[in-house]
Length: 478
Image (tube, rainbow, N blue to C red; front, side, top):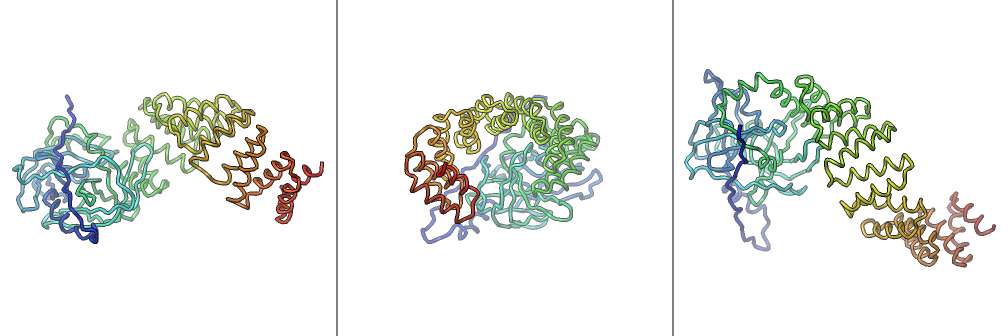
């Protein structure tokens, strides 16, 4: 089958001039009126003409509509009801995103009635106001508004958007739009152990769908009913609903059922491994993740899963090997390099540890954890100039008492006593309860020949009954 990327007709968002005293909410009715014609009701029928389900969708091009896949499954015929009351029979299915629960269907509608909505590829901000335009069959349209309550990153899947706007069963497949009228997600309603979770599939997944040959609903769904993958994808979607709510224990059985249904489903094997890892069952996680890696060997996330569980099991060399495979497959992931560094730290291979942290920081200069570990590794090797440089860099992103204490220790070891006094003084001013920094400040005073000020630090530590007081006393009274 020759595949071609979907090309969308994107309508530029209307720009409104808002008076300084007016709020964006004042223009909600205008927004709703503008985008409501783009939303459609979707009703499905079986071969005998019996109504099966109702849902929603929206135009992304004059002849193309996006809806939820579960809305059209088992159907032989699909009808589209426009906001103006006109009804059209959809021609068929162009593409399906099983994990995203999305279906791209083709329609023949007069262009003046097919008003495409602009699609936003980037994730929304948490707290951003949104509107869901549903169109349950038989109604002119339903509107619910709310905010983006969370944008979650689900490993092995991608982003999922949690929203506060309620989604009625008939509104699955509705566009979720921001206050500029841009689609930021596709509403889907998933039941998870007795509760309804309102979330949206990010609209960026639409642009990754590829349109194939047109299939009739009857042939596509007949084929689906005969394939294990279609059943497994529905189970995967149920697991995803629980995963988006951080309920790994409830998500796991759905993913396990998915791989039991289709043992070649790499994405489901990945999620089985991921859930086991989160639940602390690392042997099971390694086994499941290796299944995913066998099915999709070029998928770096599967090797990260294996590395993480091997690390938790204390099998650091095996963890290094898995993380290195992931790093070769994705050279842009700083976290993978950082994980390699942690493994080498456990193995006592400091030079390789340093190299891994340097690579991590090279990819992501503000990766605080890698900068801090890099500074400590340099210090361990008595490369104090390098550790000073690392902790100075750390101070740019994490200017707290611990950073200044690390910096002071490096200056002190390098013999730069005044600089160490300044760093330790900053640390104790930021956090008077950081007793190690106060002890270090006393040490720095002694090294710089000011025992009187060191005695002051001792007395403060002694008054607090700190274990560091005795250590400083010994330095003061050798």
